[in-house]
Amino acid sequence: MRFFSLAACSVLLVVGLVACGGESDGSSDSASGDSANMQTVENNGVRLELPSAVSAGSPFEVTWEGPDNSDDYISIAKEGADDGSNVNYTYTRTGSPLTIRPPDTPGDYEVRYVAEKNDKVLARAPLTVEEVSANLDVPSEIGAGSPIEISWSGPDNPDDYIAIAEKGTPDDASINYTYTRNGSPLTVRAPDTPGAYELRYVMAQSDRVIARSALKVTSVSASFDVSDTLMVDTPVEIKWEGPDNPDDYIAIAEKGTPDDASVNYTYTRNGSPLSIRTPTRPGQYELRYVMAQSDRVIARTPLVVLPLQARLRAPDSVAAGTGFEVSWIGPNGPDDFIAVATPEASATDYESRALSRAGTPASVFAPGNPGTYELRYVWAEKDSVLTTVPVTVTQE
Image 1 (cartoon, rainbow, N blue to C red):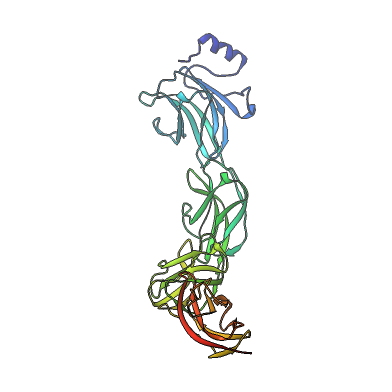
Image 2 (image 1 turned 135 degrees about the vertical axis):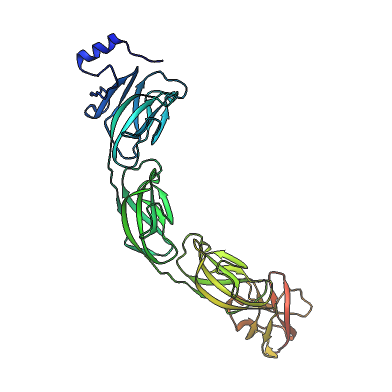
């Protein structure tokens, strides 16, 4: 326990530092910190030294002496509130000085030393909680789903945050937020849905907004460059344009299913072109550009997925060593090819070839030796010949 003797108290009275005796709000300057703002209060064997005014929500130190029973605590309460009520408190067992956090809301409060038994207040000191302000430097509009870089200034109290919310919603509403402890500038992500919003500096304890700035979220678009007819269970290369916001993705889904449904998908962060695998069953599908936060589709195009097949069309005969064109239909996998080969050769052996990704018609060369050959569509993923047509190579 920590107590003051009457003699010690008398000395302090002589030099005019503190008031002693019954419960008193006497105050004085302190030798440490901002002396003009410090006060010292003594009563019932308890001594409190603390600021007389603090900024809303900003933790401050209280130096104390007193009985320090196991569950004694120092609290902040609204001025005039019941002894057992408090806004925040810290146990004296944490030592002296201890840190306590004032409310976010300005006003007149008091700091109390409260005994563990019956919540009896042994000493109290007045505390003015002063208003704080913040400033946000943000764009006036941004594309849906885009990250927003925000420069800000403000109290940066523990767990304060900057939020984006629909305009007109309650102060504690938010769609996305980032803690101010992440520094300035920080990033908050815009919603996927266009509309009128606002950015807010929010005090963590009370969700009180002390700064706000209007933000217009504008529409974004996307587009695809892909064949509208594909084949089952094959990779397809897709060229695309779009916002490429974090975790946006391109999906293949059955036609008529909800926007968040998919058979296969690939993240747009993989670049353009990207590869996605077609469904394993033939049918009517659609390709979708999906915004990640809301699963909102901003572009879609119909796809017909056919059974795995291939067709070739070319001259019946060609002169040895000359080039000729082959029109083809096939799965067009990334490494598929159209080849000229002898009938007995394996799928990976050929005289010449052209990759299907170069388009149709494909340009290949006839072998230098006359004879009977065949044109092949080779599905590279399985090293499988899907179809063949004969071709005769004649003497030049």
